[in-house]
Amino acid sequence: MGKAKKTGLLLLAILIALFVLLPLVWMLSTAFKNDFEALSGRMNFLPKKPTLDNFVQGLSGELMNTPILRWIVNSLSVGIAGTAIVLLIDSMAAFALARLPDLPLRRTLLAMFIASLMIPGVLTFLPMYIEFNTLGLINTYQALILPATAGAFGVFLLYQFFVSFPKEIEEAARIDGVNKWNLYRRILLPSAVSIMTTLGIFTFMGIYNDFVWPLYATTSPEMRTITAGIAMMATGSYTQSYGKLMAMTTIAALPVLILFIAGQKSFVRAITSSGVK
Image: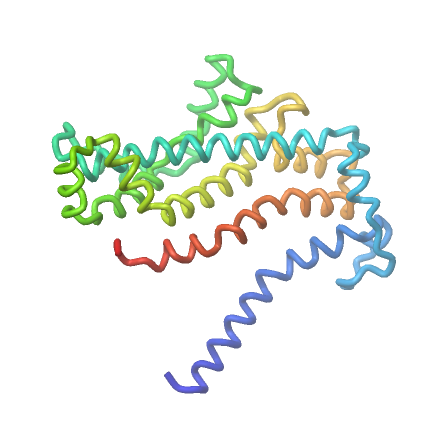
């Protein structure tokens, strides 16, 4: 690859990065502006008079008497619980499909998992809502956690790893008396740390950032997640309070940002790995 081509690709990457980061920079800048400056319409990324009032009022619950901290706790609790269940269920399902040849209808089940990836989530939204409403679970933590506790994507991702695991290691473990449960728990799972971390990051981000389902599955302010809560603020009395809304959005984005930075190495290692070493 020539030097001119490398320079061109570098410039293109920089332009794409600036395009992606521009809304984030604008959000962070507006969070430190008062309402008058935020509504001025000027394209100034540096606030003339930076203020922390938006963050203080938001975290103290002064904004519309809304429980911001409760929303954050709800989002974190639902995200952590849902991610833990997904990692357990998906890893066990992937292990069964990949390493248990005597499993009945193994190929059919795998085909069904893959086929379910093609079904848009919007098609299952209404039936799922009717089901939870019939069971009386609307406006409960179960309604926020259960819909995301098993996904075909995680099963397929872990299946690809488990099916490529060297059979020699498995045969040696069986000779040493290792049963199926210990093979899964003590050999395969420790080898899949990078893949599990990647799946955990994707799952937590998906649950934490979910907007539509928590908006309809919760009816009381105390049960809302941070995404649904901010949406309610944006359509209420704070429609024109861009500074306060951006401050709350900044706070809401911090957990996902910290999680991604902390798991970045495992994420990159899982994407670039081509097999089991």
